[in-house]
Image (cartoon, rainbow, N blue to C red; front, side, top):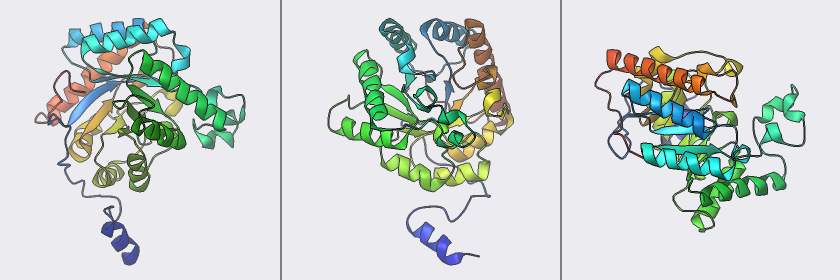
Length: 297
C-alpha cells in the first residue's frame, strides 16, 4: 500500500515506514561504543558532586550529566564548579538554555492550547536572550547545551560556524520539541543538532526507523518523571541499544516529579541507583553490548 510514497522516501535515504523488524544498528560512537549513560535533572554543583560520588560506589561511569532548570538559574560560581566537576569526572556537562516558554512573560504555555508550543521561544528577544545564556556559560567553560527550539538551534549552529561561539559547542535537542519521526530527526541533524531526544513514549519500531535516517546519537529516556507519564522502560533498554546505537540512556528521571525538579543530594543518590538497575538489565540480557569507555566525549 502507498507504494509511490514509500518509494520516494526510500529514494532520499529515509525509511519507507516504521521498522517493525527492529534491525540491529551497525552505527557506533567514535570510540566504538554502542551506549552511554546520562543522568538528567542535576540542577547544581552540590547535587552533581553527590551523584558522582554515588556512581563511584556502584562502579559505573557516567558519560553525561544534564541540568534542566536553565543556565539563568545558576551563578557564575555554580557553573564554574559544575564545569570543574565534569572535567574531573571526564564526562560531558549539558546546561539547559534559559529563557524558554515556561519562564516567558506570557502564561499561554500553561493553558490547554499553549501547551502545544512545548518549550519553544516566543519573539526574537527571547532568541537574543537564549544566545546570551549560551555565551555566558561558554565563557565559563561549558560546551554542552540543551536546546528547546528549532530556530534557536539553527541560529546557534550558524554562530558556531561563524566563530561567534566556540566551535566545539555541542547542541542536544530536548524531548520538549516533540520530535517523533525520522523526517524531523533528519531536519534537526541538518541544522546543527549533535544529539536528539525523541518523545519519551517513542516505540521501538519508530526508534529503529529514526536510527535508519540519521547518524548522530539518539538520547532516549529509560524512565520518566510523573509529569511526563512516570513510565519506566528498563526492560526495553537492551533492544533500544541494539536498534538505536549510538545511544545515550537517560536514566534517573523517575525520581523527580517534574522536568525541572530541584533535586536534592538524596535524589542524586536515588538517580545513581536507577542507573545501576538499568546496567543490571543490560548485563543480564545483552551482556555483549559495548559501553563507551570512561572519558569518552
